[in-house]
Length: 285
Image (cartoon, rainbow, N blue to C red; front, side):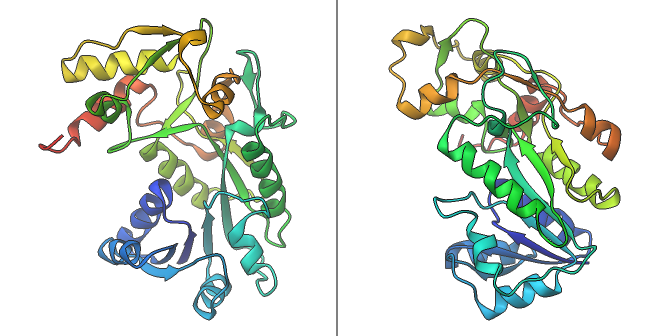
């Protein structure tokens, strides 16, 4: 197994490290030398990628048997696909996965979002994701698409927000969001390796869409702190990006991934997920 991870961010690096620990030869891209050293320490062979193709990256892509793409698209499209396209012709049968976002569903007024729903993205970022999905699924060896909601896990959760003093409880009645623990995302990706179905789309999220304030309250309980006060949505003074975030309300279905990938959640709700994050807090925190 030769694995190439295009974009070793929070999820990409965890996936790469998981396969490296299982004995696979894993290469992963990063933008800086400091990131390259972190990848080496995790057993991943780094490739610096600034948006332009290199001989090393071209060779890695051509030889890869498994490819995970997780770099956000820009105004021109997906940077990795744009760089690789002129020279890259992945072998038929290569497992390719693209990490997208449930933002492509836009607003469902609290209703459920399913993989076969027609995307109706509202933000420019989500529109770019929808376009990138189509491009990756259009390859000679089509990509699987994994649509992710709010991602959290050790070092990146409501616990850190509470501890840093940035946690807010914004009151918008009826507003719910879906989320996914990083461990469960990596588990879904590795389950797909054993059950490939190119061009298939999967929602990867937990079983309990809820208000973000509920998560903050649980984080405060774990930390032994008083929850911050509820702030009415209209008085929250949100940025334009924050307003766009709260303009979408949906519950994301994960039934397909469970049924087709035999994917089992380690953290079916934020309660179990935050408990796990709590065990990883450093003494300094």
